[in-house]
Structure formats: structure tokens, C-alpha cells
Image 1 (cartoon, rainbow, N blue to C red):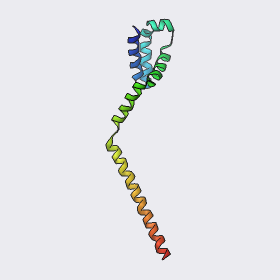
Image 2 (image 1 turned 60 degrees about the vertical axis):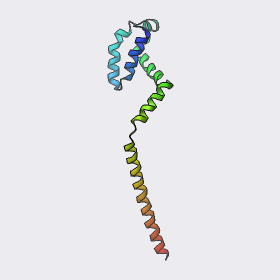
Image 3 (image 1 turned 90 degrees about the vertical axis):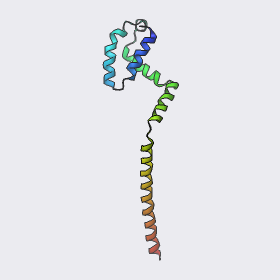
Image 4 (image 1 turned 135 degrees about the vertical axis):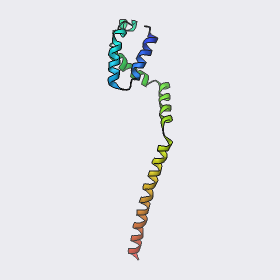
Length: 110
């Protein structure tokens, strides 16, 4: 397995969202990993490599832009509109209460 193939496998491991599933996948890959030239040269534990790779890939600016775009694409306009409607209702109720309080103060003054 060359470094390009190894990187592809590491990226697959890094992409596993469930931590426990990722740990199991790392353990399953460990025997094959130890046959790579990278391991033979560096003797770096696979768990350490995956941890550092996740950090490395997370800090890549091109990937950061892609992740931000995915977040933006997943924003729901419907949810945003619902939130704005709720905010409008709360402010409307507060304005009504303030107006009623001012009327009471005005009546007391007269």
C-alpha cells in the first residue's frame, strides 16, 4: 500500500462520525497498516496518525470553505422564517404591554 492509498484509507477512518465505530475501524485496519512503508519507516501508532490526520484535514483552508458551504446549504430558510416570526410575536407582545403600562401611567397622571 503506497502513501496515496494509505491517505485514502485514513480519510475514510477520519470521516467516521461515531467515535466508537471509528475506534473499531482503526483496530480492524491496524494489521494492514503495519505492513505499509509509512509504518515501517515511522513506527507511528495508527491511532496517533488518525488523530493528527483529523487535525491536519480540519485545518485545510480548501476543506474549510467546503464545510462552510455545506453548513450554509443545510440551513433551512423555513426554520429561519419561523424563528423571525417568533421574535416578532415576542416583540409585539412586549410593545403591547409597554403601551398598556404607559396608558396606566397617563391615566394616573390625569
